[in-house]
Every structure is written in structure tokens, then in C-alpha cells.
Length: 511
Image (cartoon, rainbow, N blue to C red; front, side, top):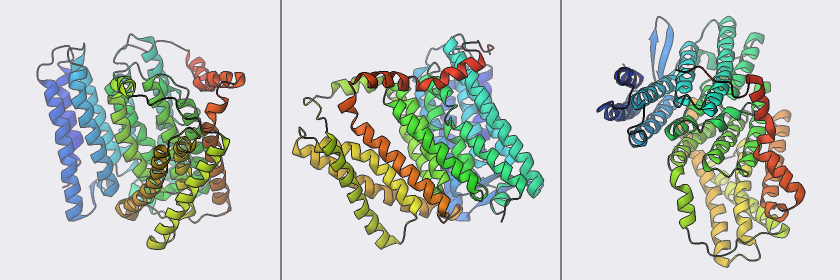
């Protein structure tokens, strides 16, 4: 019997007393919530030890796989349990004395339990159940301040988009049952070919993942959940929003059989990443900028899945979750921290020549590191090299500051060192991810004509946008730029169209 499946049961048992103490003074129950989340983390560590000693295991009932214990499930369960414990601990002080404090703790524990069930699911029925439960609980958390119109609007958008993803996942489940006669994830991932029904099902899986990760153009709800308490934002942006990526990685052996699905992920993910990154730069509020950052990061994660870099996509989820949980929970002091930093003087603005040199230097450093790693560890896939190129474009912006005419020599040396460190870190983490999760995931597909076309398109798109961002200070004060900034700050008004479709600020029913 595996120990890890006990974690969701433990959290649900701990959440039960809060149903009877939903009000302001729940006694010592908040301490119980933190203890339960810490116990879930301990069970996750016990599951890791059990995996190390006994290997992968499966919990089944009459031929239907329920929960699994493998490297991916343990990694995600540990991540969810750790973030859940941090959020629960933070919530004890954040909501101390708040009306309905007990209800919040109960809902938080239930949400963590639902996500733990999701990441351990071994069959599609369990996965569907976990997704539905997660959506219902998160809606209640978004409506914690149910009298606020903004919270009602965000919850209304969320439940429609999330529910549409659930319907797509249910439809895919039915089609996969008809095509293969099984719903166990292990059996589906080892299917040699995709019959027509399965092709449609994979398309629905991609649609469900896109909806769960707030991909373009239905991303608006994710940027409007700030009326919920800060711990909810941390739990959503650091955990629940990753569920679409978990869905794709869990069924990666099936999804990778469809070239159309992989191409759709590259296009949709790349577009979402670029759009979210550009809008993020125009935001003045810290938490709103973090929300748009999440949109961009989820798009980049979908892009990684579309390229077949499954291990790197999983690493991206882990890194983004830890970073975003810290960012949201510390957002209250972010402005004070920035203002307290001593300003050395005016910011050095790089010119066109400095930006061009920075990109050339960053790419040259990346090529040197890539050649060294390839010589030592073997040939790298073009998908992995292309992804590294996109990442190094972001560092090029930093180098451009160091190469500006007014920049001191120390800043130049520091930015070049940062670029070298980023290239080294990328390949090092890639090796680690492949060692830890690679045996459980499909190999990177051989790039054909379609894959090469998408790789070139993605690299050029990210390069052009990064180059334009680096030159932004030179044309930021142009009148046409001011108008463009307003449009981008409003997300090109795509969210307003969704508002109109759902009735704007129509109130959601009170809970």
C-alpha cells in the first residue's frame, strides 16, 4: 500500500471540522489546518522514499487504476504539498480575526486535497473528478468576499472557462474509451497509433489544457482574481493554474502521437507567452503584473509541451510554482523593498548598436556553452537548442543595459557574467530534468519539416519581441507609442469582449 494517497484523505478529514466553525473564532482549528498541511508534506516525502525503495506502484480497484506512485506524481505531490503548507501557514496570520476565517481554512485544505488527487490520478475518471472538484472549490475561494462585484465577475468568468475545460476533458474521456476500451493512463500512453476517434480526443485534451492554463484569448479571468485574499492568488498562480500542463505531461505519450496537437500547442503557447509578456510590462500594480506574468509563463510551458520537451515543461512548472508563490505572498512589501534600494543615478539607456551587440554577445556565449555541453553529454535536440535561444533573448535585455554608453564597466562585466550563468544553468537543469523524469516521459520527437518551420517561427518571434523591448526606452515617448501602451495595458480589450458575453458585472449567486 502506498503512503502518498493518504494525503488527500488526511486533508479532507482535517477540513471537516471547519464546516462546523465557519465564523470568526474557530479556536485552535487554524493550527490544525497548518498541522494537516505539514502532515501531507511529510506523506509526500514518505512517498518519495517508498518510490526510491520499491519503484513505481499503482492503486487499482477492479481493474480501474485509481492512483499512481511514480517520479512525476511524487514530484508534483511534493510541490503541491509544500506550496499548500506555505499558503496555509501564511493564511493563519493573514486572516486572523477575519469573518468566515474557518470557512477559508476548510476550503483551502479541500483545494489542496483536490489538486493532490489530480497529480496522482492513474485513470481519466479520477482525473476528471479531481478537475471538477478543484474548480468548484476554487470558485468558492474566489467568492470569499462575495459582496464585491469584481470578485463575482472573476468567479463567473473562471467557472465558465474552467467548466468548458471540464466538458472537453469529459468528451475526450468518452472518445478514448470508445477508441481503446481502457481509461487507464498507462495503457493510453503506450498506444502505438491513434485511430480517428483518438485523434479528436487528443484535440479535446489540448483544448482542455489551454482552458485550464488561461491561454489566449480566454486568459482574462486569471488577471482579475485579485479581489480574493492574497493566499488564494498564491494557491492559484503557484499551483492550480499548472493543472493544464500536468494534464498534458500525464498523457504525453498519447498527445505526442498527434502532430497537429503538438503544432497547436507551439502556436497557441508561443502566442500566449508573447502576448502576456508584452502586457505585463505595461502594468503598474504589482499583483496584476504578476498575473500577466503567469499568463506568459503558462504560454511558454505549453510551447515546451508542443516541442516535445516534456521534462523541461515539468521543470518549468516546479520552478514557476516556487517563484510565483513567493512573489504573491511577498507582494505586500515589494514596493517598499524597491523604494528602499539606493538609486545610483540615472538609468543607462542602450542605443541600437548596444542592443545589437548585446544580442550577438549573448548568442555567442550560448553557442559556446551549447557546444561544450554537446561535446561532453552528447547531441542535443534542435527543440532544446531553440528553447535555450529563446531564453537567452531575455538575458540579452540585461546585457544591453551593461553595454550602454553610460554604463560603468562593473555593470558590463556583471551582465555578461549573468548571461553566461543563465546559459550554464539552462543546460545543467536540462540534464538534471532528463535524468529525474526522462525515463517516465516520451523522447523528444525527431524534427520534421513542420517542426522545423514552427521552431524557426518561434525563435524569430521571440527574438523580434525581445529586441523591440530592449529598444523600448528609445521610442517610449513617441505619441503613437503612448496610444499603443494604453491598448496593451488593457490587453487589447479581449477581456472586455468576454465581459460582454457573460453579462459584465452580473452578480454571482451568494454562497
